[in-house]
Amino acid sequence: MPVADASGKRQLRRVLTLSDLILYGIIVIQPTAPMPIFGVVSQQARGHVVTAVLFAMIAMLFTAVSYGRMARAYPSAGSAYTYVGSAIHPSLGYLTGWSITMDYLLNPIICTIWCSKAAGNFIPSVPYPVFVCGFALLFTMINLRGVETSARFNRWMVAGMSVVVLIFFGYALRYLWGQHPGATAYLQPFYDPKTFSWTLVSRGTAIAALTYIGFDGVSTLSEEVDNPRRNIMLATVLTCVITGVLAGLEVYAGQLIWPDYRHFPDVDTAFVYVAGRAGGPFLFALVNLTLLVATVGSGAASQLGAARLLYGMGRDDVIPKRFFGALSVLGVPRNNVLFSGAMALGASLFLSYELSVELLNFGAFIAFMGVNLAALVHGRKEPGARWWSALPPIAGFVICFYIWLNLSPIAKIAGGLWLGAGLVYGAARGRLNRRPTQVSD
Image (cartoon, rainbow, N blue to C red; front, side, top):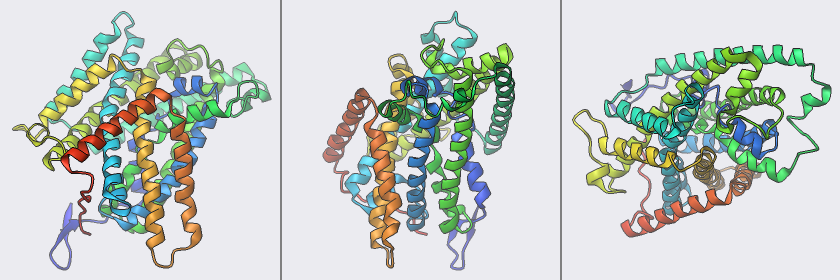
């Protein structure tokens, strides 16, 4: 709720505490974040899912520090596009924004694919394309009606998912107690000399990074935070740590329960089968349903986010305004919802879940590298800056770049084509040198 300052200027109330920010970050990421990608990472990293998740956390921690620093410099921006465009150069900011646009468009596709696979676990007789059409249509119809998920519903969803995670841990402990695995088995998820390969673990890390996607959303609340110079950075870092520890425990238990990374009934929904092995049909159904409902919510929300991003770009005439900048009588960017829904429908029939995740991470890591560079450049301009203050953004950039390099060649080719198209379009429309619009404090 906005309030007026001493000069009568309206501004948002700074009422959010550190714990509020951390809760928000966990809501965005979700407690079950590593479960959908468990099978894909397990196969790519040859069973070293925990190692991949923890290595990805290191990259996110350094990047979180950079987001915190940039939130101090631009407390009302909260955008990688603004950070990079303002601190380095507008053209790099434009490319960062173009990369983020790809992420927004890919999120509904990823959710459509996973929901269709999870629904197939319940009704295997229904062909996969039928589920794809159904979920793409469901997300589109929800957003055409202008229905948004409330913050209260999100909190209840997170509470429900947390209970399911605890139930899973209970069954996992009971199962492992009955199996009596040896001491060596408990270390294998971290390091198995028979299968360990740093190249393959790095490849798995490039996918496991999806676990943390959304942590940067904390910085968008800068204008509503009590003591933002301290709390934004702390909340972003702590959100990554809490997510990494919880995700590490989940995949560690999953790897102990199902150590054979080569054989899953369905690699995209592998964790559901892990739950079934630990707790039988009941836990199989519970985890499958929980992840399905959560992904439906994420799919609808991500499609609306994509529609809003396209609307903002259309309204600013970055992309064709007549189509993308239009609103329906309900105040919904209808053309953009339909466009995003059509993309989700078409792409989900041809893209694999793994490739879609890698493409999303391609764009995300472009943004992360950009923010780390922006923090480095901005830090050098600050009066009294210490030399060691450059270490976190340098480390964040190097690790993110290394992980980005380990994406599959096809993901890098497809992502490169997207960036190339953005460069051509931006040059043709004269967008490469336009500085980001900033809201004054």
